[in-house]
Image (cartoon, rainbow over all chains, first blue to last red; front, side):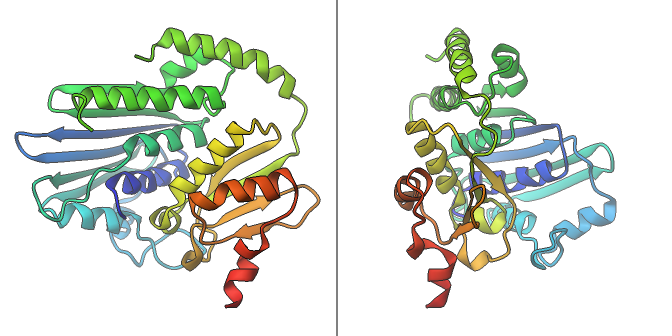
Length: 183
Length: 124
């Protein structure tokens, strides 16, 4: 994957497939420790201990169209090649938590890329689910919750073009704000 | 700065427009493969380009959706167009740049862009 934001989009699709009503995504950078934490947490159907072991193996997949599943292995590789790590915890019936830590000063650190686009795609393509997105650098943190947006919107869907456009611009503004105007 | 008040105004406007749109259930479906293979090959900008183009043209009978792995990973990004009463059209190796042409010729005017479909690409 060219950007970590694409890995996030990919991993979040697993939460959608697991029928999670709520998916939380966290992208938090610690400039002092030179670390980036990316978390994807869901309350979907969860996995057994054996399945958790298996998803790190590229030759394991639940899909039927082909025999390899590269989502988690690629994300794990992206983290480990920086000297970071990937952790998965899951419980059947409760949900799954995928957490990856990256060393941002590593030469093999993949850029975060366009997280706004990933979040917008997830929100507008899965309006029957809820998302909480947190983006932060050190103590500057911004949160977007689709539950809050839905309270305002009522029967107007998040996929309505004028609404999507507002979310897109809102995400971009808030992200830029956190980054201190430097993109 | 974008405010939640602004979102309320957008809601009211959208709600008024939505009522004109009711009762057209069987439109065209544009489906983009968004499994690991599709995403790695560049499906996200393709999906966004379709959403933008459909919104820009105000096409009311068209939905853009995502799906998992379509099963021909080497041809990703793959886009399938489902039109009621017609055979499915499968576009392969899509890019965001190809999207306006496909929307104009196929979605709006009903002429699939054959040279971008799986039948044309896989032969060579």
